[in-house]
Length: 163
Image (cartoon, rainbow, N blue to C red):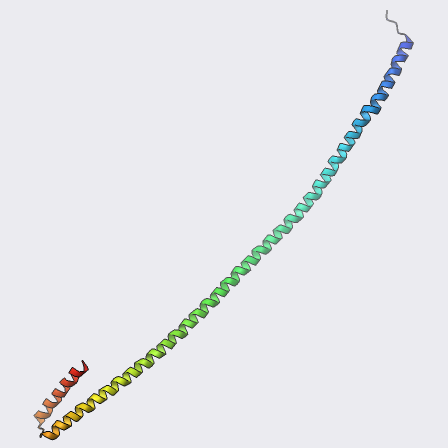
């Protein structure tokens, strides 16, 4: 039969308790401390991530606002450039109209001067022809037939001199 000696059981029980105390103090406390340190590290990392996430959201909102501002500024600059270009175009058109009107006035003045000059030349020619006719009429007695032939001759001379 199996017999149990209480002294052996007592020694084994003491050995077990001492062994458990040694394991508890040396290993399990260190393991628990390591696990608590790890838990603290994870918690602080998650807190930092949440804080960083908040900062990133704030930066994103700020950057979105800045981008909208830049779009608004670029649109305003584009509109200003278009308006400036339109003003310059209008100024150039107005200047061209003024220059065209000036050229028209100068051309009209030149035409008028040429017209007066041509009229003066025609008058001079008529005077010369009249003088020639008077001179010929004085030299000979003119009949109706002679007058017609003289006028035809003078007209032919005027036609030849104007060509």
